[in-house]
Length: 256
Length: 284
Image: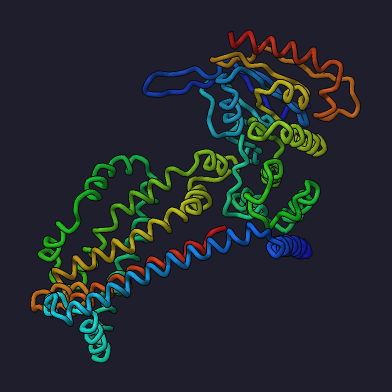
């Protein structure tokens, strides 16, 4: 199987007048189509920088990055990217927020509208499509942001702590919702988070980064003996605790 | 379609429920509301009382010759002057010219400063280069420029409009530009993650996100343009309210001067109210 994403010795260096900082060094890994990868690590380890490079917002200082076997610059299809906050534009209705990406790409076809309507119905937002963002709860706003991202039909989705702005209760619900949605649609996802439970409960594999400069330190394939596996049910799997302790140790060692 | 309807009925129901709530308000709530209403009437009443009392006192003082009505004028003289100028048509001429000059300079200030702010946003290097110049020009008292403008451009409408623009434009550029660069960087990043370029950022986030700020800047600028027009008219006009003030004071026609000032008050109030109504309408 051709991996959707391949990284070979990717590194990144920030330059400021005060000097240069090596944020990432020698990162190599593959992601297969349909996989869900979580990336964890101590704060400031360059997790977000890594996502920005994969998203094409930054270009790596060293190494090579391939999507579908092509260099990043040649891959023209959209890569979905969800940020910490939903960043819904408060002067646009929910519907017009969701069509934002399609407007930019000039692909707001009747076909796309149909797809959006289906998603709105599936994720319980159809009645709110003409509402403004301030009228929605945090969880609903985050779902609207997800639909905005998925409206572009990305093959690859990047999540940068997308639940961290929500309160704990909502966070569990939304993570469960979104995890199931992405599984159903078979979208390859990379989640960056500092919440280890969240990382383990959603992922097929967890990658641990070291503190600055961020290097790939460990990799855990998550295999849980629980059926059906959802982000919520995963937390009750007997192996969950072992993974948690092992990964927690890795991250904790880095912080001290 | 059917769903917008359902949202509407939901809203309708909510409104109904709040209505039914208000019909069953407690005695304390009724008392509170009554007190609020009374306070409002009282404040409004006293405001009018001060205004009318002032006019009456002024009129009596002039009539009883406590003050010299030649210098201090009186409400009845001003009213008579108003009536005469209204019938003669000169009033419309003066007010019209001042308003026209204000609108022309205001439109140029707003359009120009939005355009320049966009240029500065688009090109951060340019904005760094221009910054000290804009800051100096903004803090310069613009009335100091007016005499030079007359020398350069002559005593005509053009000079008055340029004078008004010079009063408002620099602050306007700086404020609009500051609004542009304080748009959340994450929102810009969002547009980039959706595949947008710099023009998309401008069109979809920076400008719509600054509209409220631009409206409040417009409210300040309409007043500043009026100030600029009056300064210009003091020095370079043959008509307009500023001309009426300066000419009236030179020939001791104090009724012209005071009438012009009262009309300016009313114009300033109306222009501000128009923009404020516009601002309220835009709230989402």
